[in-house]
Amino acid sequence: MLRRLVSRVYWACSRWRLVSEPAPDRPTVLVGAPHTSNWDFVLMLGIAWRLGIDVRWLGKKSLFAGWRGPIMRALGGIPVDRSDPGRVVGEVVDRVHSGEVFGLVVTPDGTRGANEYWKSGFYRIARETGMPVTLGYVDRTTMTTGLGPTIELTGEVPADMDRIRVFYADKAGLRPHLRTEPRLRSEDVADGSTID
Image (tube, rainbow, N blue to C red):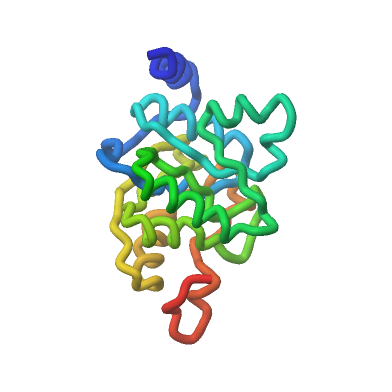
């Protein structure tokens, strides 16, 4: 397959090293973090193509304008209207329930800048579809990238996020100063039991 060949050449020439647990063997939500650079997209494609994962990813609607639209869709892109982010969760859940099989790449820390919280869409999608969450990463300090563990979310938000925080604690991203700590806004609500 052409994608596998391209990815082998990429990893052979890249200064980055692919270090990965085995690819998930069922549909999963692939968390891409820390998301601090546009280069994360190239690394994500390299990981997916090398491991043979059919991926979809969420991108802002403007990325799909004009001539870029067909290319972005061919690479697995799903446009997101940021003025109505809740709608995209419903659309993804509908795709999964209709039988479409894919790994959904989500960058919950949002745009490539330091934010206060992660966006909760990845959590809601995983819970509503029954998909596990696979923790993908970029770590400039070791020049490694890849997939970490695949975990089942329990619905206990603080406990689930604690597991995620432990994994990402030593992952710096490409631009460490733009890294966002894995925390959902709902964790700062008194009982921490609801997802925003």
